Picture 1 (cartoon, helix red, strand yellow):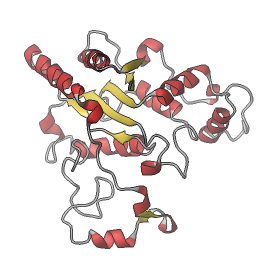
Picture 2 (cartoon, one colour):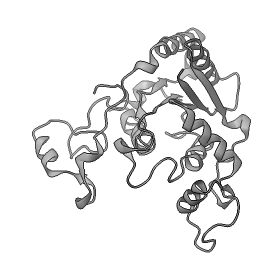
Picture 3 (cartoon, rainbow, N blue to C red):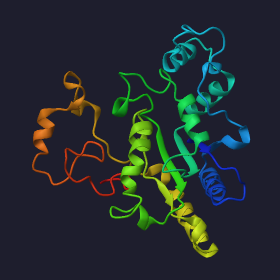
Length: 270
């Protein structure tokens, strides 16, 4: 039985985001998955990363360092109860689905707080265990979100800019950084601006995708061993030389001054 954690952020049970979350719960459970939902607003989840996340004394109160202090607290079992519970859910999950409305080109503050507080150093990553060698490399994760703007505005010649660039910090800098196999995002383009019939069609397409979601191939990222730690984790010269004649870069971030690979953050196999 696969275990799925849905990290959900929306204030309204009548929203399209809620309908997308409910569809995921229903379809995945029908496939025999065990689904757990962290409804952040209903939980009144605290997004602020502070010393209150640690029970007992901190190591250095005068020069408080959240990452180091929470790593020590995690090792000693002294993280606050809410973080311990969310880390339990995450540890048990095979797949993590983030369901949210896009706010200011990223996740809502309450979800960013979940990321900041739950993905603590030691538990979610270390300097040795990150990216393709990350702690969660046996788990899958994906973003499922609504936008306020239509797809055309997030195109390579659109006013909002290329959606692949928008998604890079979230999918590479957070999910892939922790080792997750990142599935292609589910993007619901501007549901607020379309007809009820079109919204129903969107949800049906999501339901169809969910039927085969667990078997999907993840997005491609450059493996960690392609970078030289002796050169400040820059791409190894032999790999850079190999791609010298290519028209496009390796990834959105590691583009080598070339065109970015089209659709590489929204489609697998690119």
